[in-house]
Image (cartoon, rainbow, N blue to C red; front, side, top):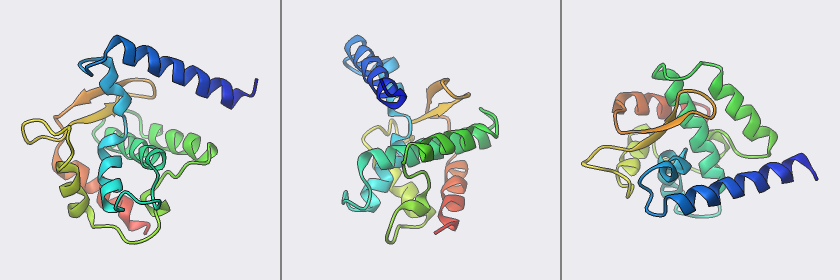
Length: 157
């Protein structure tokens, strides 16, 4: 069996096991949302159109989540590059610059992030990483750090 098919099959089984164990998203299941906080803002910014498919948004969001994690000193500076390289090898979009058309500025994207259904008590909820394979949930993320990551990501546009 092709290695990619094997990896996708294994990933689907792992996801199904997690969902079955945590149907109400109180524990491990929330970790499946890696990249989604960024993704949902990008989807809203593109009008939920074919400019950005959900999987593409998640891939870009994962790269941004690793970049944010690295800048916060949670993971190595090499991890975001490794994640981007892997996603790019899989044929995925990995940068905001890969999204066609106009997008809001960093503040506009941050505002869209604040409208996400996963915002708790007015705080954004992120899945960040201490390394590849070491994700965790936190709301303790300085908005300035998020804005900085978004601003830098938009420079390539």
